[in-house]
Length: 140
Image 1 (cartoon, rainbow, N blue to C red):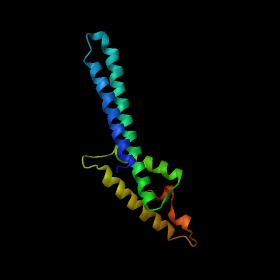
Image 2: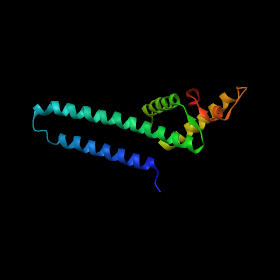
Image 3: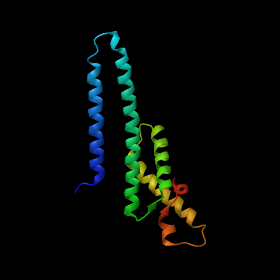
Image 4: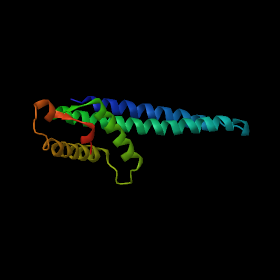
C-alpha cells in the first residue's frame, strides 16, 4: 500500500516535467530576433519553475517531518511548522553535492527531539501535552 507522500511527489514531478517540456518546446519555435521577448519570458518561467521546485521540496520535507511526528505522537505547533519550512529553505539553498533529503529529514527530526528534551529537562512541571509538543525553539 502506497502512502500519500509518494502520490504527492509523483504528481509534483509530473507537473514539473510537463511545464518544463512545454517551455522548452517553445524555445524550438524561435524564428528570428523578434522572438527574444518570448525567450526572456520563457527563461523567467524556468526560473519560476526552479523556485516552485525548491518550495515543493521544502513542503515535501515538512510533510515527512509531520509524518515522523505523527508516528511518534508529537504535536507540531503552527509556528514550529513555519520554523521547519524556514530551516529547510535555508538548508536547501546552501546545499552541496552530498545533500540528501531523506537523511536530512531524519537527522533534523532527531536533533529537534534532542533539543526539545534539553528544553524540557529545565522545566519543573511537565504534562503529557508539554512533553509531546514541539515548539519553534526546538527546531534544530
